[in-house]
View 1 (tube, rainbow, N blue to C red):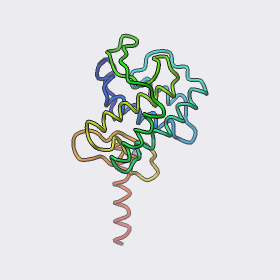
View 2 (cartoon, rainbow, N blue to C red):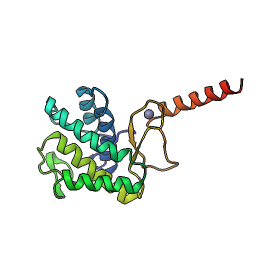
View 3 (tube, rainbow, N blue to C red):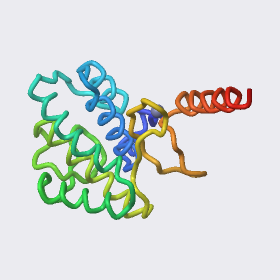
View 4 (tube, rainbow, N blue to C red):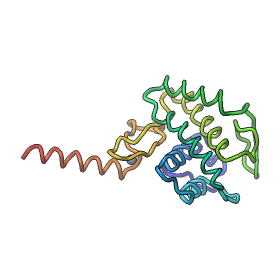
Length: 187
Ligand SMILES: [Zn+2]
């Protein structure tokens, strides 16, 4: 999940960047006690440059949005992900529009206003990116990390075999654990 270079405007506004940002925010916001500084760090990592003073209300709304989005990331199959996305699009997003706020390239938004609340922005921008990924790949847009006790969600899109873990760290940890289990069993 390497973030895209922040000086590349169109890459920063790409569908994949928006989907990866959604996964990173959902992972941070659905922890037991989400840390506002971590939320800000993710937003900065994905190129947010304006002032970022998230109020407790903003954070609450973002957490509520993240809980709904998490269901899409953890959906077992493509059809379930599509049905969940349709429900979110119907109940939580506005009509599709183009915007170029703050000198950004023109890109689509589903929230009602460029200065709308953070929770609405998170839900709308994530729904849009995940919907396009479903359209483009005909696969579930994301998944839950398969590592024991890891609650990260991540975007599955990319070349090569389908990933099961959120990070190299989780993949290594699981490989080591499996190896220990095998050697313990053979003694
Ligand atoms: Zn993981």
